[in-house]
Length: 625
Image (cartoon, rainbow, N blue to C red; front, side, top):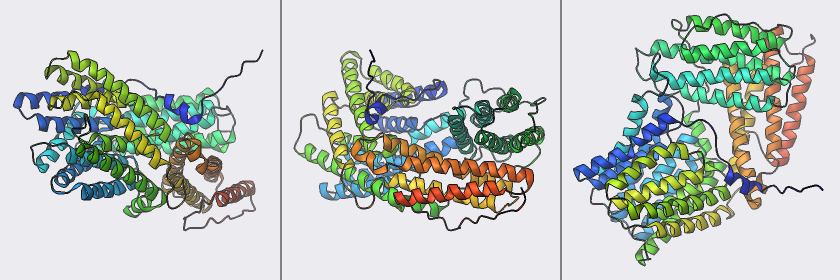
């Protein structure tokens, strides 16, 4: 008898998924040393309100404390912290001097700006979120301190976590210059990903391994892109890391070409990149590298890239290397924020934040039971409405479950813990758990709920678990309603905007290869941009596909465009490797690229995805083979 297995719908299945990976012990240590000790210092000195704000700043910074380099953490932690302190300053003075209606309009306007920032990128999105959280806390939390002092305390808390991130070594990083352990691990991860892709050539796993290589390259690029930690003393180490990353680009190109061809390689092909990965992690010499067979253009390119990498590893300390990346200009950032995706996100976040702020103030004025401070409702709406945190239904289910769990657990702790020392200990433990709980939105919500409830009780507010549950469920209802409201323009604009950007990047990369330019650094930068924007589009499409059917239908078919783009970029990469080997493209390659471009344009036209790329793609046919 055949047993029928019923799969969960995508919108529900997503709520049960969690990220994997090792426990980030260094981030756990920083979390334990951040909010709790700051609160303890405030209790000992009698400045509890400022200590609460500092602990909130450290907690919010902890939600952005992810694996990576120290230099990248300056932007990842610092920019949102500055935005949060600005929001706290503006919200404090707005709450003190504005009536309910003007204050609601102010919060709505801030939501419009912060929502548009979601379309710009992760750092801008985090900054927008903390701007709104700070504004709501400043307007709704009555404290005796002036606004500038509140903002300074918040910034000091986030700054303390950033100091810990820059100063403390991570486990196993004391061999060599520990300040660059994140960069070394990221670059080594690229070589490991290349080796894994080479092992998967000719198998069904090749596509997933190629996507993993893109993610590793993106991570390494971000890790190396931050500010220098010291201008002179670290220059040799920085040059070496930049050179090692640059040396990985032709290896990644050759591995991608081999995966496109689908011809399996022997074990020697992946052994070389693995030895290079070990050399990067150990900051040591590479030793002899096994050479792969040179029977095909991609294999010859792989062998040549290994030889050049070995030379680079030997001389990188004394050679100035430049990291070739295509940075987004201010014009690009404004185009993203003011584009269709930015407008859609901005309107929805503005409506949610403004509506939740208005309802919370009305409940506060009506003296609703347990609603002493009204900031919880708009703060909850901020985290719920953000589209980059996952599908809407998954966010709502996770937030509701996490809040209920966290509030009930806190109610039990509040009944037995001594005050304030027991609550300070609870804040310390929760601060350490934030990086681990970040693997699932519900778990993170539960930990943050515990932490925040402990903070407000230290500040003198009565135990408020029941009211927090009610406000969270109300915020969930607001976000669900606003999330399904029709908006001006095309629904799913964020996905389409990212897919259009990926198409433009693919066209720019193809045009450069067809021009047969010998500027490999420019080609590698264009290839990185093409694969990176394609990965971002793939992520946005996957999130949209896991929405409720009423929302998911608006982006149906976009995955087929992404698949065509992927084939086009992979074929362009294989053509570039052949171009380096022979000096020209074959008629068959030109024909295949022409066919792919034609199919892609037809599919994009069918879905209404128009290209904004200014340079047309010209195909030049050669008579030689």
